[in-house]
Amino acid sequence: MFTLFKPTQFELRHKNAQFANAVRSGKKAVKPSRYEQLSKRSPVSMWALGMILFVVRNVAVLFELARLIFL
Image (cartoon, rainbow, N blue to C red; front, side, top):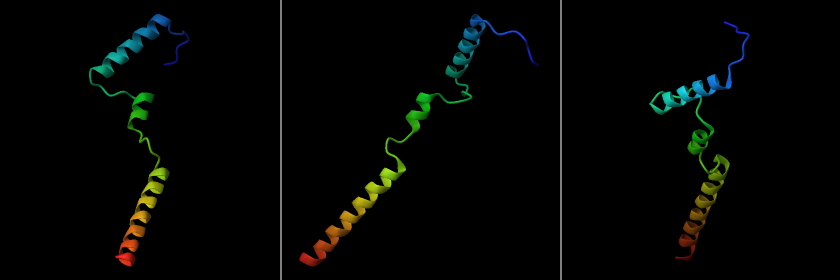
């Protein structure tokens, strides 16, 4: 129901403390924190990983060709 009063700062702190305690006790947070989102993110983007794999594969092919030609 729509209320006309604004919660006090004490009420906000109390609700935040209750929510934090519930999350710490094992209940799932509704929305993961920014720190959790960043900790799950890979430090290397998919584009950079693709470029690294492309270069490594081509270097391996070049070495194999050099081995077949010169040995």
